[in-house]
Length: 439
Image 1 (cartoon, one colour):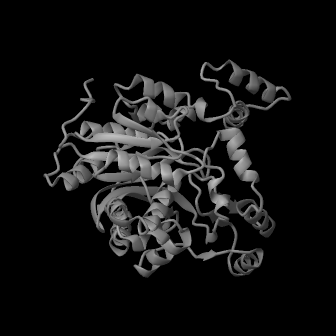
Image 2 (cartoon, one colour; image 1 turned 180 degrees about the vertical axis):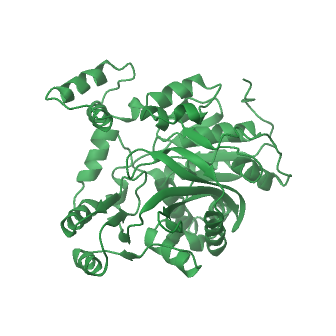
């Protein structure tokens, strides 16, 4: 397959992708923007990142863990992009911080702030999109249906919430993704325990991130004396759903909604979804984008109530999501719509990648051995063998100990009965991996 990668003319749109973790979405976006005729650059933690494995990226820059905002600024100055696209929540916050610094940089700062505002939208949205509570308050003001939600800064706040609400309830910490900062409490004792887990008073979580994940950004939150903001939310019994959209100055350009068919556990990310036509989800996206003046990609998560079928907005992802790279037809081609907006040209209509309404995300559906694989469109990055290999074997992002822990978790998730030797066996398998690197 000819993906038409390589150097472009000086007239090509320049796109800079930013990513502080090692998720698959940035590499998939890079491919689609390159196929659309753009020059794609990326800044990311260089060790074992999928963006190293695709020919779609023409320029690569290291994302420094100790000075992330400075390295981000350096990459922007080197690329001079038309648009910056953050691919995870921390990358979004780095852009917000860089925008705040730009006022002290003179003429270059004006250009920098202009680029960030063109990429993300109105600066008034920046404090809102990164805070779950504030975003849901805005949604409620716009007449959208949201679960009962309150900010809980202390255990006393939590006790007050528990007296007013029934169980189960959900606790969520800002700055987390993929279900890592979400807890479902079924008793007051559980709620208190989960609150303490989500509001650590030491750097233990940071050290864990360094030891298990080789996380270069582990120091960033507590260097800034940041403590996660936690919300308590009433539980909506039903099925999860989400939508991904791309907007421009508060106007939705394209979007697609899905129901989650299967996920990595109760709180984890979706791995198989079904494309649906849900007007309530798209209306929510339109109202949020318009109210906050948003530009670029974002996603919204919902719960569809089991008894009533009502659509509840539960949170926002202020960056690209796994749906964003997929061309699913007219009005559902997010990359094509954004390129058309940037170039001032009509959106080039191309056939959707599939007419199957079931989509299996790669590699999530493979890793969990989903039973829906054979009945779904399998979203494999065709023509990218090195990327496929990297996504199927994402070991480089984990230390030896971290990989051993993953082996144990996968065994437990698949229902295999643990035995006293399982951990040591997992360590040996991790040692024998061809992708094993030094801690």
